[in-house]
Length: 378
Image 1 (cartoon, rainbow, N blue to C red):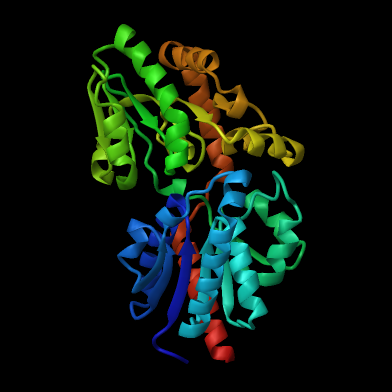
Image 2: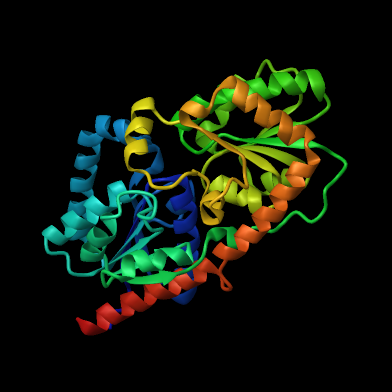
């Protein structure tokens, strides 16, 4: 059995970078001699001996955006396959981003890569493109899922599927609502998301400036978006704090009673912190039209999907316009009864997706067990 293992890990989005970073830390607790290379952002990069691409190299979001970047992504897949084969990694981990990571592993198998491949965060086969479950079962050795209800979609095809729970497990609820009445604007992790949503944040600011000028607005964001947001808010006549450091963000959340959130992981985090929210999102119109033909769920937010009803107000895509946004934003600011009911419903929904054990520890254990079992077998 080997002593020094090499793992290739691939995360192309910020949420994947967060997951990858924490799983690496847990694996190193088990065996600190393991070497990691791969694709990741600023968090994972500290632990990667070789980083072949950054998450900043992946900006596409919808179907048409991906099509326009297809040549670039095919080239990246080819390059990474060559790297994995050349450096002979003992195991491959891919995180989320199924439209990039599935072709990567499929091509690796085509070139006779026989070592274990583990994918973390299931593709949303329950929402659309159900056939991906069967495809994943052919190329991956194990799938680690964030939601318990996802297991049945993959296990029916013989793919070992393990429920680890959602990283929201690690977020602490805000127990005390302070006298301050601050609002958080969460604009997503991609530049494309930021550009599409900033006009709505400006509408919210203009309303606040007239009606609640003493309120503090803060943007919890990422380093690569910080400068653009600061330029955008430079002429705002209220106190605006743009924050990238985790400790400062967590402190400001303790003084926050409302949030406007780009749909995604951020919405779950806000929910776990017991902060009322509205969710907004906007895709390319052509991506939206194609999505309507195939998507089987009524909602964008996972908690709304779990409950099969609108417990968190969401306005997305062509439904997102100035009038609808401002109506929802005013309700968020002024309707305490609606916000109270939202939090009750959120806490009921969170119980359905929560794990009893730390997700990153479960994931690290499964990765290491796969690593050892394959090493013994060979």
